[in-house]
Amino acid sequence: MSDMIKRIEKLLAMAEDKNIPQAEAEAHLAKALELMSREGIDQALFSTSETPEVAIYRDMSISNPFAASKTSLINVLSTSMRCRAVQHKSAAHNNGTAIIRIFGFESDVTSVSMLFHTALIIGETNSARYRRMGYTSRGYHADYWKGFAQGISTQFKRVTEDISTTVSAGTEIVLRDRALEVTNLVHATYPSLSSIRRTVSSAEGYNKGKADGTNANLSSGRGLGGRRAIGS
Image (cartoon, rainbow, N blue to C red; front, top):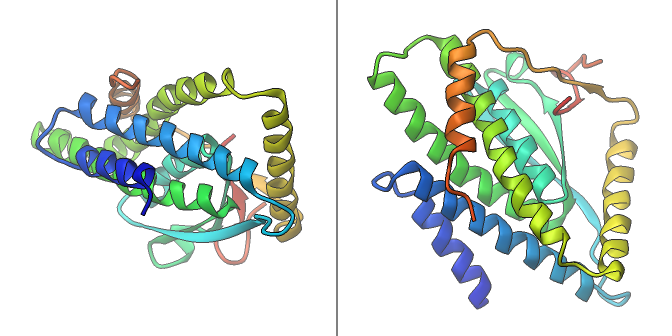
């Protein structure tokens, strides 16, 4: 195991500690994303014609409660790691478990899985705290997850933008080619995708979730539940 992977795993473990402040947990999460993103770029550059990386997809399961809302979080993380997330099966049509298909290069897809696990723990810790404070409605917590994803997106966008300013023109070309390969695989797998539009019923829950993510100190579907690109 490389020193970089060990460092990333240590950051994620610290982020999952329920005894530290939320801002500190999300700071660890953002730093892990930064390291993962840079590691993924390095792997892209070192990929050779003899041992080429190819775009793949991997399925991730999200179970109720609030599976539909939590898919917003996977979309944020997928975008941050140069991947695409597609809803393969919705929770409503799959016994309460959504199946999200993540398209990307293997190292990036693995990073999405690791980051989602940690972000889920942070969000669930926050959500449980609000329940103890008396915010118990399903609508509040469903929209909390949508807002939490949006807040995390704001923070992660800053991280990825910082990284983009440091890469060379040659690296940008490599990353664009890889992004095109991922997009082509999505279209080959799902020739026609509809977009999921997220609606909010509890503005209070959404705004609280968004604030938790944003204020952190971070340096036409049918059949099997609808196959849709997440995000709109």
